[in-house]
Each structure stands twice: as structure tokens, then as C-alpha cells.
Length: 486
Length: 112
Image (cartoon, rainbow over all chains, first blue to last red; front, side, top):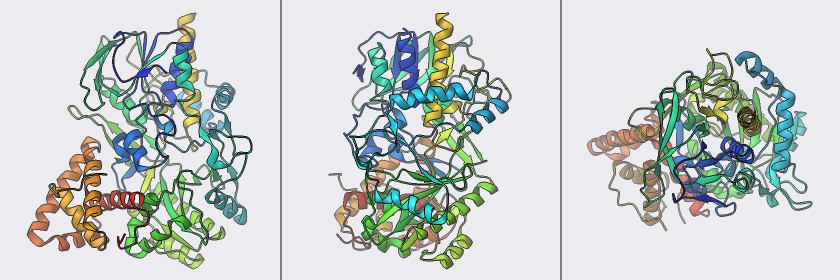
């Protein structure tokens, strides 16, 4: 491993990559293997898999931005999370994998005029990614919380399937035996093997621009007790800080054309369901997903640590709180929607963090209500004794009659809405009225600045976006390398 | 183990009072430890929301001194005023997540 949080190397490189998540790590591997001198800067620490319990508060402390307490302001506000560690979000997310839908690829190509954006090419890259990350379904026994989703959907005749994950399993292994094949285990070691270097626990304060080109990056150390401002010069820079940090970095550098104006997310609402047996697996998430109403609404399962179960009950603690002592019998599920709303990310001079806002449309709010009601129905069909919806003044749901009361009581403004899928804050394509970069991530108005992460996706794909991000990042990195080779 | 809060900030005072109401049987030591956790998390929030939370905290603290913390808790937890209503929600969310992850056998009233 050649990642370090102490600056000992030369302060120049050919290609600087800001961020080491799904976009940054893949970019680093492709460019280093093509012979480029690559330096990766990561704001967070390197944390090996297994050092912290998945989905725990300790993990939030060490690997999430702001300890996981981040919010897009709005009515309602939407809580979101960002990874802040080597490997970015791939180290902390659920590891579920979905190829970009061909309909989404066609829509992006058409509406944003993206050149050479062929579904066949992208899906071919997805096959490479799947091999690298050992994407597969669970070979052995599923968790009970996962089977509940499958059983409920089957009882209702709703379409459902198992989402593959980027996990490795022992032969015939159970769901809980999987080992996450995140960026610190796959693309980052590949990049290091090809000569890439990585500096962790350093935050990019500013990209210095001169005459339409970025000339240097000013960094400051984030590790406690380390205070060593650093300036790095480079020929080209890839900004891969994710859909919130990337637009803020560009805006601070004076690159503002269509940057940060079109944040897209998959908003989710949640419920906890109680069964007459132990169903809770604290450190894993269900892999079955219900796609009957996709792409508008999808259902899945969430992490269900006892702390997260308590969190899901807080909106109606007096009525629901008693259930917390039975947390082994509870699991948390979500309804996610494909939103038509959009948000803003805006860097503010003199303030470290950008302000993030998001506005749900009337249709989005209605869809969240429909999603929650259908999810509750599925839980009842799966045998739930009680369902606890996560919105203020929600009734306890024990039967179909209660469902009607729940539907009547629902208002998105009372709900605990959250998301983990953020994208589209620097969309790609040749349609300059809609895009911040060209078809391969090069930022409009800059000669040597590229974006290569979730910010490029023209909108939220309706499925877990990591495969889309990785495929597009690899495509763009190869284009960059080919242009310089030929 | 996290050091207990000394209730030196407006938010810590409100959080301590709110937890006393929500979880009356939670002993003082874990309650203060939970308040300390909440304080730390708020300190790490992004700049603008952190400023907003602190501003609301100061306002609520002033109101609590004028009208009594119990009345203010009752008011801010019931009135559906955007942003203000998010304040007790944020505190409860952080507190309950911390308590049940740290002490999973905690009872509904906070008894341990």
C-alpha cells in the first residue's frame, strides 16, 4: 500500500485526482496503468475493512463526512450521507450493484447530447467492473430480514429480485459471510501497483486557476495534530469528490457554468416492521429489492442496528417507543422514489462547507406516500405483527384498515426523508445549456480540469448509481489516456 | 468512554432537559454522556446547518430561561414550525441512536 497521511514526496505530479471513491479510484487505476504519474488526494483516513463494525456509530465517526449528520435543506429537509475516507462511499454503503438501465443511458445520450455514449460499450465496461469486484448474488443462506422482502413481494405477486453485491463469499457462504470488495481492496491497490501515490487526510482548500487552466492545488492536513499546508502542481486534475464536494470545488475555482444547479437524489422514507421471531441482523442489509413499481418506486432493506431501530421510532416515541426493547424482532425497510425535484449545491466564500438544498415536487411527495403505504402492505403480507412508519403522527399499522389511516395521515413534510444516492451536480454532454462538462467530463471553460464521479450523471438513474459512476469514470479515463497516447 | 457533558452550551442544556422528559429513568451519567455525544456531532456538522442549529439553540435557551424549559420543550416539540421543529428532532435522533447502540438493553423509559 502506498497511501500515507504524511507528505514526504515531491510536490508535483502529472495527474492529480481529488477523491478516492468509485470515480477517483477507477480513474487512478486506469491512468496509472496507462503510464501517467498519478497522485490521489483523499480528505479522510485509510480504514481497512474490518477495522470498524459496518453501519455503526464508530464507522460514522471515522468514515462519514460530518459523522453522518449532513442535510439538504428544504421542506422537508433530506438527510444524506457521504463517505469521507479512502475508497469513499464504497467503503460504507450497502454494496448493492445495479447496472445502469439502458433506458437511462439512452435518455442521457439524447437529452444531454453525449458523444460516443453507447449502451453496449458502457455495459461492456460493467462486465469488467463485475469481474474486478466479484459482483455476485449470495451463494448460501440469506438473512431473515432479506427473505421478508422476497416473501412479502411473492405473496402480493409483485416483481422482485436479488440485487447482486460487490462481495466475495466462501463457497456456499451465507449473506453475513461476504467480504466487501470496495475501492481499498480493488482499484486503489491496482493503481498503487501501477505506480500511483496517495495522500490521505488532506483536504483540498482551493484549485488555483490561471488563464482558464488549473495550475496548482492548495491542501491542508485534516489529521489531528498535523498542520502542514501543501501546494501541489500538476498538468491535469480530475475532481472526484462526489456530488456535493465536486461542485463546491469547481465553484471555488471560479468554474460555475451549470455547476451545482441540478442535484438529483433518490429520496427515501422508512418504516420498522416487527415480527414474531428474531429478524434483525445488525451488521448487514437485505439484498432483495422489490421492483414492481420501478423506476418510480422501489423497496429495499436498511441497516438495522439497535441504534438505528431506535432512530426509526423517534418521530412517535410515546406511541412506538416501547417496541425498541424488542429490537431483535424489528428490521428497517425503505421506499425509494425517482424524484423529479432538483437541488442546489452552493459554495459560500469564507465558509468551509457548501450549502445544500433540495426541493421535492408535489408528485415526489405523493409518490413517497404511495411508496410507504405499499411497503407497509408488503410487510403485513410478509407476516409483520406491527409496522411503525417513520413520520410524525403516524398510526401504528397492524392490518389493512390501519393502512388507510396511515395513508390519510401521511405528509412528506412530517416524514424523516433521507437519501444515500446523490448525483448530477456537474452533468456531462455537448448540450451547453444543460451541462457543466463535455461528453468526457472535461469542465466547460477550463483546459485541464475534469470531473469523473457521480456529479457527471445527468440525472438519478433509478437504481444504485455506483456501477453507472464506475463505468462512466473508466470510459472517460480511457479517453483521456488514449488522447494523450495517440 | 466519552466524558459526560458539563451542560455548558445552550444545546447541551436543552438536550439534557429533553432527554429527562423523554427518558425519565435514564440515569444522569449516561444522559450526560449522551449529551456530550450530541454536542460533538453538532460541532462536526457542515458550517451552515451547524450555525442554524446553534442559533436556534440560543433562541430556545433564552426562551427556556424566560418561560421555563418544560413549557418550551412542550412548545417546540408540538408546533410544526419548519426548522424549529427540526431542532428537537435532531437531538432526539442523535440521542436515541447513541443510547441504543451504546446500551442496547435500555428500556423505553431509559432505565438500564
